[in-house]
Image (cartoon, rainbow over the protein chains, first blue to last red):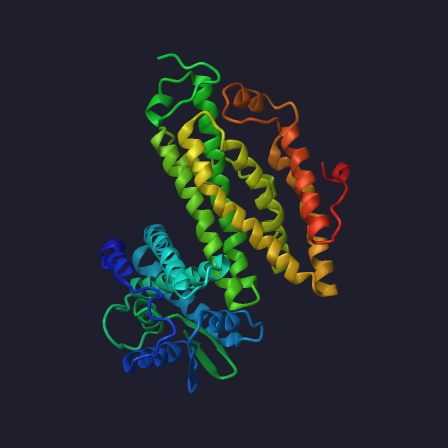
Length: 187
Length: 237
């Protein structure tokens, strides 16, 4: 069995050094746009247009809509389950669960404060919204760790892996929101 | 150093010198919280992520699950500090409470669970916030804001759901089915354990007193704020 601690060794450092939510509302760079495309393609969604939202209120309004595209969530869940099976086969259930739990716990501790600070800088003091942002970031960290544990390197460049690309967007201070009507929304 | 009823125990080290009755009573409470926080996150919060209707509510539920899990971690760490074996602080040896046997099938049910079960948890944490074992007092005070947020989460989403007649019926139905399970959360009337907890100042109130207070507060919430009906207390008890 592979040692999960070794496979995921760089994750705690990446969680600490990420610029969580610090660049929301600012235009995406070219490489970040490529990450968005890679993330979408990786979960089976192609030819989407991209809309960048500029304010916390616009982001909140978007993620509170009930008519979002369910194929986006399903695509993520299907991929996560496949990767989790692969990772479990490689690492073993107990060791993998322990490693992922530790990482999620670390991520959870870090991202909530970061989201609250970023929102407050923009005059937003909404506990529900900052907690929701923290939940999204924790989930992204977990998904990227599963992908890496499955044997797919999440740390380097544009190598065609959805959760690595999604995590890079969070690391860069953005928040990929959701898919609605053929459009991916990013904050 | 002799520790008598009413004395404060300031550290986990001091607890080792406390009478067995005090020490074991603290252990029982820490184990119960560690087990139930974990089990609650596993049977309610994690599965509810899939049931949540929007990205906002899915991620918020994910965060709530992490916070409940975090409560388990904090109680487990305190438990380890006072010498409880880790395997006694996960579901298995210690049976989780019967309130977790409710089969979660809908978002409305989850919102009602947050509304009613987290209110019950708030009452327990409020009681421990004056505990004479100060590390447990501090831990409960640290946990309180998150428990309050979770109950608020339940109230906010229930308020949203009852805007439609269909949602109103679904929330009322979940309250009717879930409330009857909750009185057990407060323990039996005339409980020997509770007598020991109060003797040492670990808890402040009887189980009966806590349950009566809970029903009053649940009624204020369900009938006063949501305009729904709380099932008869006699039926629920």
